[in-house]
Amino acid sequence: MGRSAERKKNNGNAAPLSWKTLAGLILILGAAGALRWARMDLSFYNDEAHAFRRYIAGRFSETKEHKLKWKPVDWEDTLWFNEMGSKPHALFDLWPAVL
Image (cartoon, rainbow, N blue to C red; front, side):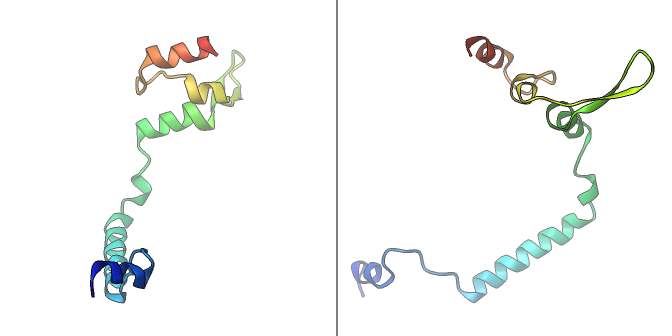
């Protein structure tokens, strides 16, 4: 059977996965998950936690009266503010001025 006959047979779609391929993928994903399971609670390190609090979640800050006050993060800070150096400042400082 030629190439054109094969294309007509499956209408140009990719062939479905065989049960052996699917079982192999499930085994690989299961083994990878099992190897990583012990460290799942360690996946949020200091730099990621800081970025999450600063740009997404918000944080508590202490007032002059020594009380805690919640400071939510607005969308402008989430999109444009950067104090960690992960984005090029010149480009991201220019956009709010243009808009």
